[in-house]
Image 1 (cartoon, rainbow, N blue to C red):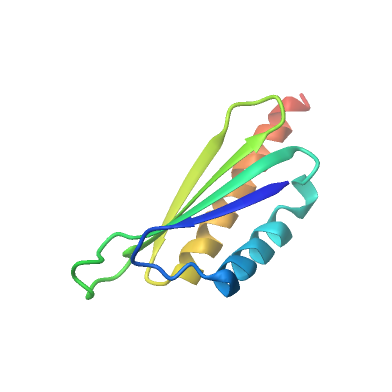
Image 2 (cartoon, rainbow, N blue to C red):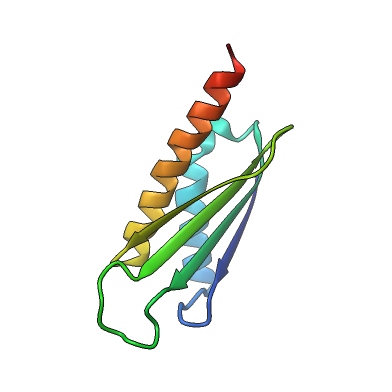
Amino acid sequence: MNIQINTDNHIDGGQKFSDYVSGVVSSAFHRFSNQLTHVDVHFSDQNSSNKAGSNDKRCMIEVRITGRKSTAVTSDASSIDEALIGATEKMKHSIESTLGRANY
């Protein structure tokens, strides 16, 4: 499973951040790793020009499941970490649903 992390220019996406995000994503999707070929994680600050505001951090996760079209989810939160956790939870449910339907 290849994991790619992207940030807009308002979020510091250094190596430490990338390592942290990769660890969270790898752990969250570990049981699906044989079925996932690629995971793209995109972070953005929706309210970057106005620093005040809640739920202005967005995490979008797109996964490619072997033999299927890519699937994407987004989560908005007041912090990057909350947005990441929200998006990974949504994506786990989406993958479970997709793979569960394939088994019927």
